[in-house]
Image (cartoon, rainbow, N blue to C red; front, top):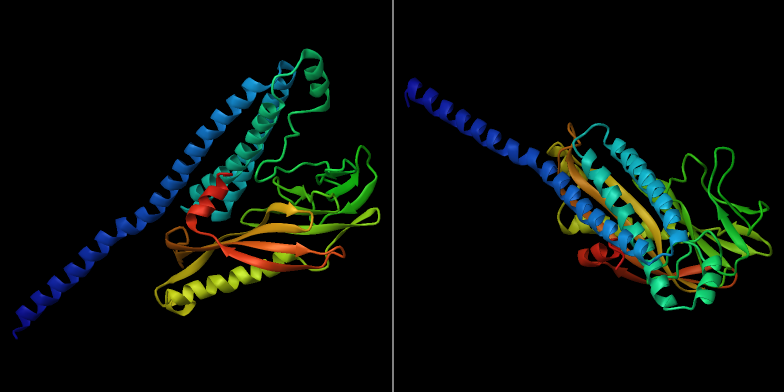
Length: 349
């Protein structure tokens, strides 16, 4: 083969490789743009549902309660947007920032829809009333106290009305106090800097136990507390810890089934980027049985440009947990959730 012909073939080869790389670059860059667009679209749908539900609640409330709901809603929107902005900061300026922001806004919005729908259910269940009876009921109710929905909304007051949850402040941790007083009966596991705006309690029906959901950014967890005499204490071991370990093992098994390993990814300049991890009480089935939702998600990303991502992997499991009177517990059932079930849960269905 002549020298000129060899140079010609090498030149063609180099041009072909460069052309292929250039053609793939826009596709790779478009991956995160597509993910961002999907997250934005999901939020737009959730926000439209929120506005529709909010108007429906507003229409059913008596005049005295309407202004209270408006003020509550304005405060909630400000809190949601601030928490979403904090979530976006986790991207450190990378292109995945909008996904984290809109994802968090969507999650919080859907939870708010569930709370508002519970208010509608309450008003509908009340039915037509005489002026006298409605006046009495209005005095005993408020916008923030809604009847339980299939997935109950959090309430600061225990079902037996004896205990009250007080959020964290600058100078103290969140507390459980005797209702209507500042007399502390238990201090909870986080502080003002770690609780997060979404921190809340979900009481067991008999008011002898509750789940405390807390965290911020991409990690949230649930701690369980039990009444001991007149004091609330955290359970010595947490169901959430075991649930998280099981989810992690299932996640590793999923990667193995798909023939993905850290070593293989590293050779390609990729890694598994942590997106979120959460353990959240789904509901109390009864005073001694709880459903705990545990989720873990990671996405393949470029090592030198973490904002550029491709395939995502997640594990979502519902754990049925049984408690005894002493506070001991065990996981008696697990259910791996399909994506459809995860989406329905996020919508509060």
